[in-house]
Image (cartoon, rainbow, N blue to C red; front, top):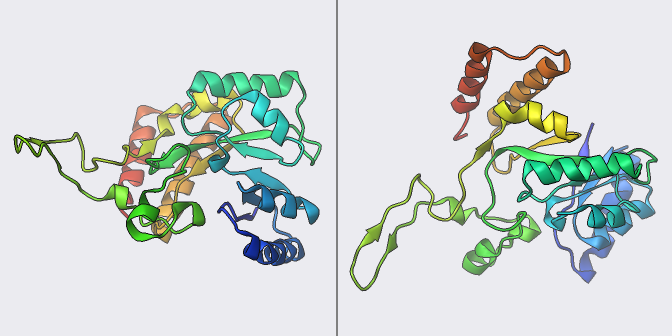
Length: 239
């Protein structure tokens, strides 16, 4: 399936461009639009396109999801949610039979692999402040992932951090937590890939596909298999 990402903030002068994009997407039979800005969501629906609500909408509870279900078929849940809250939201979707415009149960999506943004659910202003290039407009310089040094200017004492990044959280790898995620009712797994190579994309998606298929067939992977998967993921970590 092909999903077109238009999850940037848009301005009035760009609405016509959004309409052109959505018209083109409809013509090309794109399966869904990923969006956060309401102008994009409503424009996509005007063209009867399925919409997946971006993580930047910061959906953190069922009431918000219930509201959005009038327009969207899937929601990328806030990155900050623990597994218990994800499970509770998915349980309510089933209990309330919450459906999107496509007349199917709303699907929830979560990030499982890659870089974590310093901002809440990806809404960061660091790149904009430093380079006048907004992450919320699809132009993040990822300056949080550079090496910084924190120094007490009065004493000159340098504070060392655990890991290479002072500002950015550690990258995530939930390969060994897939069984719990599947049990929680999550329908879609999201692998972060901005600025990554084709090698990275190919290897990570292949590994998670193999792992998911393993669980689907009720064959729990062996420790040796998990070790091989992790080695393959590590081989493309910095690409």
